[in-house]
Length: 640
Image (cartoon, rainbow, N blue to C red; front, side, top):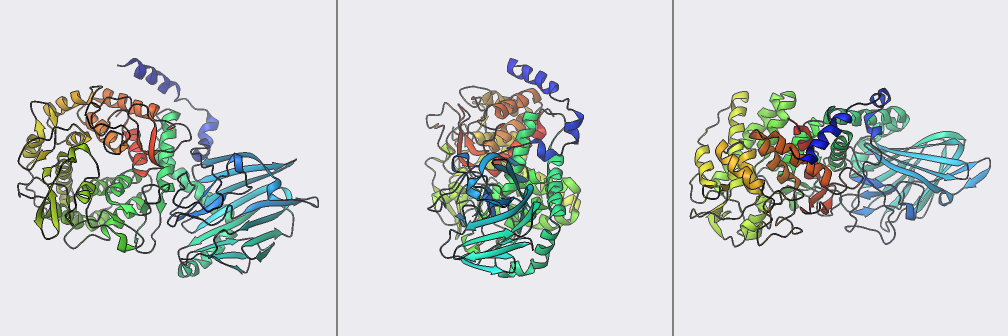
């Protein structure tokens, strides 16, 4: 056992003892500043360039940040619209007070502290002896509550709307802001407040002293949604204490389901951050998106829809702590299943953007089975089974050029770039120099058969057989597992490789070779040989294990998307595959390396899209959902 790992085990058991006070404390409150969401927007309005972290929750299409220390504003910043990438205001509710006849403007307050807990943001500020505390909670997809606390003050809340084309109106005791596309932001104040609007600004002032107040911030896709929620909106504000408590209970449920009791707090913090990342990327049904789901990242302007294989990975993780959301995540893609069975690459609130030029690797059946395992929901399984079979058959009808039972990645428009996209590994070294062959009027394949695709299809076939017996529906099984296993394994090199359609190996060692072990397609002998390749430092056992192509490949580039960086889904497939063949100690060692070496993972930095295999440096989209999903899977499987 490596010395590093031995020391970890000692520390692990030392960390397991907790005090009675800790046990009684609500779980979410044990993880302050789980992410640093400090950012103050400035004019001109930041749009697509904004890539920092956001507080969003409950499927809302808006998010907020804590103000930065260097540019303090006495209110939570935003909201920021996640689909259109627009800051509606610097802070929709800047807080000033009156105490003992003295008026203290919002800009006179100085920063005291800020934090982001799972499920709520917190900030406090001071002016001389006056302290103001603010907390922000999302109640549901449309409503957030701002809780204000101080000692015997009158409140003066104000803001300026930045959007030139916004229409601002007063409706009873609410500020109503209509955006250019018809979306609506409302800020509703207690009845004891006087609300005044002047051009693009407002001021809401309380008429009586109090120690605390509640303000409702709401966001709706259109007037119809706002009207249908009107009665509920009133109840949320009238019962603000209960609404907040329900939000806290929801988060404690997430975390109590997600967290293990036998792992150290550093590991638990990674799991909590992963849950926070997934839930912050949760979006409700909107426009042509008919079910809820999780976007890849709220920090990237291009990621405001649902992608296929991202969704399957998200759903597997969500099934353990947010089961209904997991089901919806799967349904959102299958809502747009084509007549021939194809699942589009992605879906958006405007369905004209849905991409049928390519699909994505077939992991949907895995997601559905993991969801079923949680509560044995036979209705869900019966609903999904025919759709999954239809998707499975689509691959063999449209992506098996020579009809030999071994499929290829491809596309529906004859463009190489879309065939690459279908693999999910857009610029992988193994696809250098590929050509396309036509299978039909709207079906092309690479002239290359891929080991990961066919291992996924093997796994899908195995799960479909199990599902068939549960739902009592027929499923024809003609899959030859031994043929696939032998076909992609190079006996001379002891590793799995893609092949050209002519049968020649493509001798590029990449993480696609992990999938036969993850799906348990590999024989024990082949798995043992492949693991020996994993363990070589010049191949896959880099500082952060499992770069997407082996480190000694001439085309290896540590910072170039699928040509060298570490992707956490591939890390998971590798580690879980090792665990499948009985090498628990090695799997745990690799997991420990990931958990302790990725930059910022146990601190307040976000979880990123990919990482430098030599240093653990974070690359590309922060707050990346499938990285979070697979970190949770590694966490749940550790030590087992």
